[in-house]
Structures are given as C-alpha cells and as structure tokens.
Length: 98
Image (tube, rainbow, N blue to C red):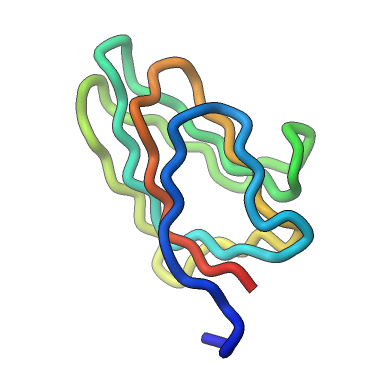
C-alpha cells in the first residue's frame, strides 16, 4: 500500500453516496444488512454519479447481514458512486483511497 493511501471503512445508510471524488478507490468487501422488506440491492459504479459504469451489484438476504469479499479488490479509477434500494439497513464497505 502506498504511503498516502487511506485504508478504512465507509458506512452507507442512504442512496446516492459519492466517494473518492477525483481520486481512485479500491473496494475489498461489503457487509450488507437488509431490512424486513426484502434483500437489499447495492450497486457500485465507477465515477461520482448514477450514470457511471456498474462494476459491482450485489443482493442481500431479508433481515440478515451478508458479506461479499473481493480478495485483491475492485479498482474504481474515477471514484465510487454507491446506490442502494429502500430495503437497506446499512452497508459497510472496506476500501483504500489513493
């Protein structure tokens, strides 16, 4: 990891969150918790708007937490835009930001 990287976690509880504006991000994993209304869908896009290219889309399980691990990670060169549906309770993303 480069000396200026910021490694950590980001808690998402609402739709339309832009991360790493102007800076690349690598996502290593997601812990997705869905509510009782159904399995939540989380979409991670390259860029900082909903128009970005979808790199990851995962579906959770009703009233349960689910882990998605990506080993060496997915690289988002133009930043990261996270969108979720109404069934989301929370999503915890493990990330590195350059």
